Image (tube, rainbow, N blue to C red; front, side):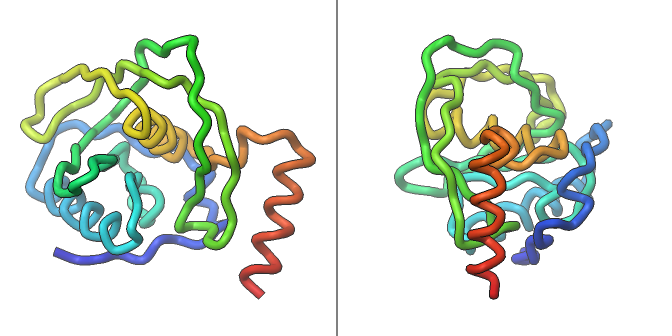
Length: 165
């Protein structure tokens, strides 16, 4: 398929909640395929459609060691979250060169529309859980650094401006 360009921060699409997906059509399947190619080229463990300028509630996640295990999700939502937290350094191809350590629930149960167009539920743990939560944030118009304190967020954005020249 196609590796797509990631829209650069502060593009307004990164702050706009994405639209729900009704049916899994050939067009949706093509977008997912492009998203997987784009995620692999970064390389990353997940990608949300708004990151490539597509304003639909679509995400792909592959936190497997061997790769090639990408899960396609439409309209994903966390329906359960463990009280146990997991720390992980998160970044985004939309704001390259910077990252921040965030705490997110170590396990989540997510309801979503799968590649066959059926409502599915799945428990994610570890890096899979972190990535799927990160993608859902993107679908809601949030960036990972929105979860930082104002001071840390401002420092990160200043660092990003320096990195980008």
